[in-house]
Image 1: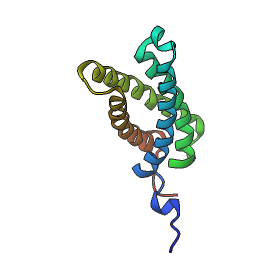
Image 2 (image 1 turned 45 degrees about the horizontal axis):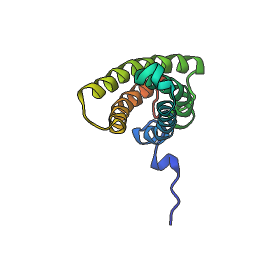
Image 3 (image 1 turned 30 degrees about the vertical axis):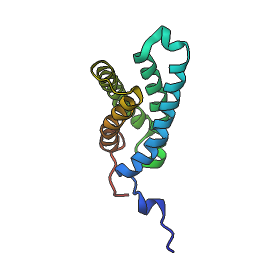
Image 4 (image 1 turned 60 degrees about the vertical axis):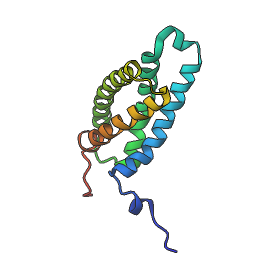
Length: 140
């Protein structure tokens, strides 16, 4: 049986590799979101603030995970971090609006809304991170 290397199964820059790392990043987001939701904090600041804080926390970690695992470190870290903050800031505002909208207009369970919203914004984030943040190409 031939042993398959991760680089062959999930080449750098692909959405499959992004989704693999994104699963880890989403788990961090989800855990922090769930923790905030079961504490009295949510009574004082509300759903939107809890979503925002969890997004900021996990996005900071995600930049470094994607730099190391998904893409590469060819670009200067100051440049990628600044661009990632731009992408994550846009994603934060837009995902919060779509999250709040789904909460208001939908009867779906809150965790399903979470999943739908994360998938939609995951695709946007992958594309923005690949081309805008890391300027990733398959060429060395």
